[in-house]
Length: 515
Image 1 (spheres, rainbow, N blue to C red):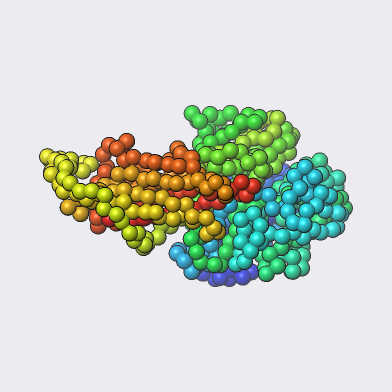
Image 2 (cartoon, rainbow, N blue to C red):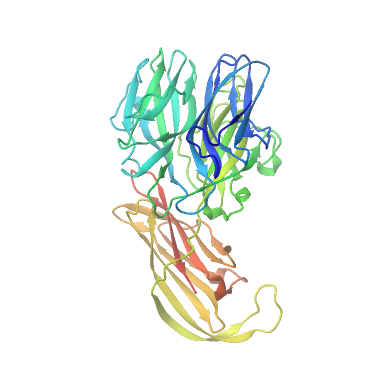
């Protein structure tokens, strides 16, 4: 079936690149899956998998084209009802002022009723009653600001239920929309992703539409804010891109077609398809299909340079039941993501990128006072790709700093310094970068990378995450590509992960001109 989205349900008639959709397969007669795509761009990639007699709900960031229409295809041997609701839309306008921007967070619990993992305010260690509800605070907790937050991206789990039912989420001061966010069945742990709007209360209500009590777990992936500031990201929608397909060996080590083993981790490149430098991609919109599982379990999704958070992104059942899930995953600074199989059986994976949150480096970088450290002259060899004799050039060495990198909450700065050599022909050479990333009271700021940018924004040098607390990179370790024309306005970009004891990690980025 094909239906119009642009110009309906609060979605503008034009200027929209994608929509955040809540999809529900209701009372399916047979096993199958939906493919969801722009009406003029068909795909065979599944968006939501369902099983006979079990309703299923899921989220998708679906691209819109000039038709303004979306097509849903039922890939099963039986009938199935469908419900489609809009959680929000993404403008195709780039830059500030294009709408609310996204701020990714390291995955963290914001509410959990399970006694062993109880989290949130007000605290609760009992399940949500049959046909009951629970309200909890979101704004002002777990690095989500207390004000100016318009929505949160969450993953919700339903577990411990003894009968079928479903859960809905909504702002606490608005009525129940009667739209499922998670459908659950007895004996399973079921999960789904949702973008939930926040109002002035800063609270979310979960309603249990079932005859059985159910435990819930809600974890945050990030938040949307209308406030302008550093760290906010616009969304770039793309045609669906398969990143991993274990059945065919796509994206696996040595092209292996083996399923992901019990307790094993798959690492894959998640950012190359974006067309942006890996360190500029702050989050990836992923559809993750757990296929042919041999035992009940779940998948965790996290940056490849971090430890497994032990928090579910996709839950799956045994007996070969495939399950789709959606996530906004943060890649490592070199663009890689880990998926770990938390089950005692094997599972195949298909991972598809829907879009990317890309950090656009600023057009104007404020100048920082510099200190002259020395001057002299030296023989300068030809640049890469050029021939000729070395030329004698005079130079001056400068240090700029401290430059401060703030996290998304602008709480604690992280200072860094750069030293560069400026030649009399207007070219510049980076000599070293120094970072002080330790704070005795608040925790640590873990240095992820330093990037020396030039040549129209391309990385000329890139140091990945190799230091902790304190970093010092020396350019002498690298041969070639050491000169940048002044006209290209080179700069240094530093990225941190700010780690505070007892708090979720946050990220920050800092810049300094070196011309």
